[in-house]
Image 1 (cartoon, rainbow, N blue to C red):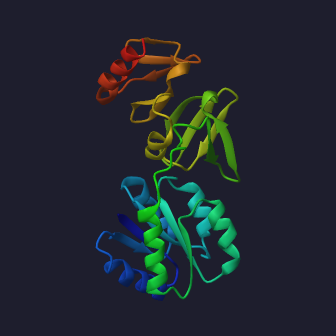
Image 2: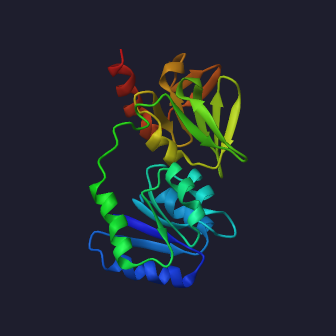
Length: 228
């Protein structure tokens, strides 16, 4: 499992680094004392497990968990036991109270090894939650027309309007139901059910012309033809 550590206390990072080094099936990709510095790695690299401190100055671990790819497993670490309930509500694998013993660390890792694969994934759900500036917005897949990736955020076009989020296109490509959504361009993911027609390598949804990128063309036409 590829993992990273985020904690604003250097001694806490050093301890977790030493623990990780003792586990053969854990590979440490990096450690950070500022969670915002870890975002780029999480966006560009597949990370399986995140050791995440809760009480940090820039953004709390709880807030950070809500904006990252939900497929990343999280083990919260903190000196404050009052956060335990909230961490489990966020579907964290475990909650480690500082000072963390190696025995307790091992127990958390065993939870991941023994945890069965969840059957109720995003593929089975009819909705997702989108992190906006001030809240988590519930959004039904059937209401999404298309997504457009911009430099620092993603614009989600719905039947009712546009929603902006700091989540990235890679996250959405991994979590949106593949039978309903398809990436057709480096900057676009479209809802297959809302395609009105296709002309000259352009998709039309709600009057919007969306280009089909060269590297996505074969996958798009194979998907469309198989759905006939």
